[in-house]
Amino acid sequence: DALLPAPQNISIVSINMKHFLTWSPVIVQGETVRYSVEFQGEYEREYANESWIPICECSLITATVCNITEDISATVAYNLRVRADGGARRSEWGTLKGFFNRITTSLTPPLMKVIADGYHLLVELEDMGPAFQFCVLYWKKGQENRMQQKVVKEVSSVVHLDTMEAGPDYCVKAQTYVEAINRSSSFSQTQCVRAQGSRSVWLV
Amino acid sequence: TAGNTIFHFGPCRISMSMTEVRAGFTAIKANIQARDPIRTLSILSHPHSLHKVKSSDRCCIAHHLFNFYVDKVFKHCKTEDSYVNRKISSIANSFLSMKRKLGQCHEQNKCMCGQESAEKFKQILANYKGLNVTSAAIKSLGELDILLDWME
Image 1: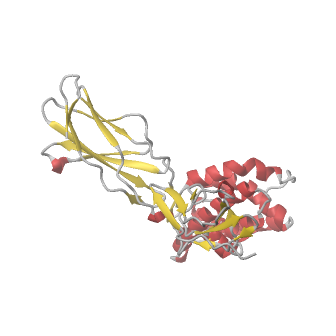
Image 2: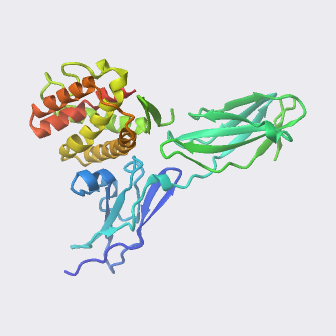
Image 3: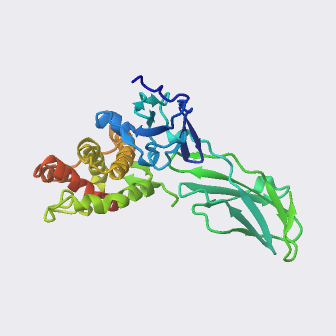
C-alpha cells in the first residue's frame, strides 16, 4: 500500500510555559486518520542513541494538537515528530522544523485586579502555575519616581501591598517572572484606586 | 519557591528547577525502587553519606555526580513503561542542563577537586561497578533523592 502523506505544517504554540504541538490534518477520503506524537530531548540526542519517546496521551488521536507541556520540562532543545495512521496505511514521521526550547515561550502580562479595601491596597493576581512569580509595582499617582516593588513567589488569594492615605490615587502594575527560563513578561495595564472609607473606588 | 532554586557549590552558583526534578522523581520513585531488589547496598551512601563531604569539596562532588548520572545512569534505566521513561527523560534533560551550567564554572577553575572529593567519588564508582550495569543504574536512579536532599 502507498504510504500516507506525512503530517505537514508542524509547529509549536507556546504561551506562558504551556506548550502545544499542532499540525495540518492528513485527508483520506472515507477514512479516519489518527496521529501519534514523539519527542526527543537533548539528552536523548547526545547520550541515548537519538532515541524518541512516545507521548501516550497523543498516541492514535484524531485531534491535530497535542499538549506537550509535561514532557518539555527542562530548558534544553527538544525535537518533536508526528505520524499519521489511516486504515492499514501509515505515514513517515513529520518532524518539527528546528528545535523547540521553552526559553522561547511567549509571556503575557498577568491578569490583575486592584482592590481598595478601606485604606488597604490589595491586588488579586491570576494563578499561572508553579513556574510563575510576580513583580508588583505600586506608587502614589504623580510620584512615579517613588515606586515600590513587591515580589510574589506564590499566588495566594489576595496580596496586601500597602496602607493608603485618604485622598491620593494609588496605582499598580505587575509582570510575571519565570525563573526556570530567567525571563519576564511585559507589565500589565496600570490600575489606580483611591481609599475612601470602606468603599472601593475604581479609577482607571 | 515557584520552581527554581539557586545552588551554591563553593564559588559556583547554578539555578535549577528543583520542583520539576523532584516532581518527576517522586512520580516514579516507587516504581524504580521496586525494580531494585538489593536492599543492603547503596551507591551514594556507602560507606559514608554525602553529607560528610566538606563544603570546599561540594562543587567538585556535584560536578562529578551530574556527569555520573548523565553519562552512566539514565541511559541504562529504560523500562517497558512509557510513563516512567518520560519522567526519566524529564529528569535526564534537567540534569544535562545543570551539568552544562556547572561544567562552565568547573572549566573556569572555580570548582577545585580536593583529596576528599576524589576519594568519595572513587567510592561511588566502585559501588556502581560492583553491580551489573542495569542493576547499578536502577539503584542509582532510585537513590536520586539522596542526591537532591544533599544538594538542598
